[in-house]
Image (cartoon, rainbow, N blue to C red; front, side):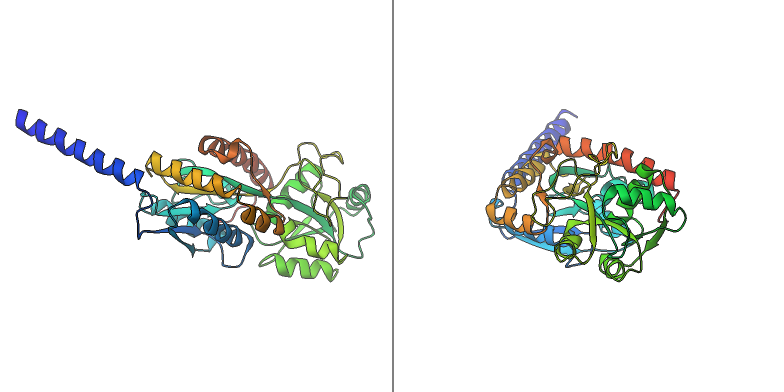
Length: 330
């Protein structure tokens, strides 16, 4: 019996030593790191992932990092794939604010957002803008409120689909304004903005990545931004915040975060987090993100614990909004 325990102890020690060595050498030479993006190639989240991968590899022994676009079902297909992946640090997940909304939008998920992932840090925040069709009679936000109030039941609010960033912002906008509008879902932001410019719909709340060029070209009317402070982007710097216009606590940004499957070794998560934070200071990465209209994260959310605490708060915030609207994706 004693011999058995000695052998077992030696085996455990050897396993721990091997694991520790593997962690310290992460990523191993010749091993590829895959970042799952639960959205189509070419979109804003995909662009963030590719830019981050290019920078992070320099801080991970020049490892090969590839992007796996596992899109569909409002990001739940790719997120589920990441949750099931081997927890060795060679499969990661990069997704956006949807990580905090899918627990409410989808009531039969095969994974748990808070329990099935290791949190590796928030990367950036993409502000949003409230814009209107060119012929909308309202020329500023005060007039928008007045116009919406006088046209109850007749105002339509475009979005890029159920669960999209613009849909979430629209729900928050209606709740804050305490006015119901008719949602008009599209299959993506591009057709929604096209119809807004064509005066087919009234209002839209969407990411600066999708609206800045139209605002700069004066193809739409811009009323406000959804951040707590005004933006510095030339085309948006004169727009007031919705908070400053009386919409208390209105703060909506499309943030992006990095995750690993639950059980990924702590030392590996630490290395991933350190590489990510080094990338957030990379001038080229910063330049590319600013071109998207994104603001690089620099607060405690860039740390794993701060990231998870933030997402917990976001789940609670969006859960109330989605449940109040009674809109679900399943």
